[in-house]
Image (tube, rainbow, N blue to C red):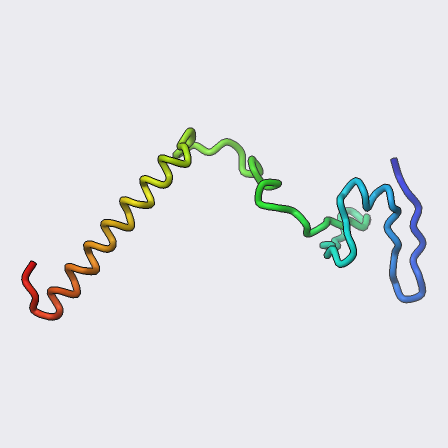
Amino acid sequence: MGYIATMSSKGQLTIPKDVRDELKLATGTQLHISVRDGELVARPKNRTIADLAGILGVPTIGAGATLEDLDQAIGEALAEDDQRIVREWNEAHGKKV
């Protein structure tokens, strides 16, 4: 379904209410404006990270990892990094471990 909008002398357009409601546009919403094949394209910048899920297709590595798996991997990486920092500090200050 299409809508008609009239441009003001200042180049402003009023987006019809039905369109604003469908796209969840609120006062202050920013729009990314571009021209594609001679047509004006306006895309709201009110997307969340969840809206981008799947945009790159199905992940190949780590597919099926749970939040617990990620938490454990991050914890292990932090623990290893902490041990390295302590070891390097002790070496720099002549401390024996």
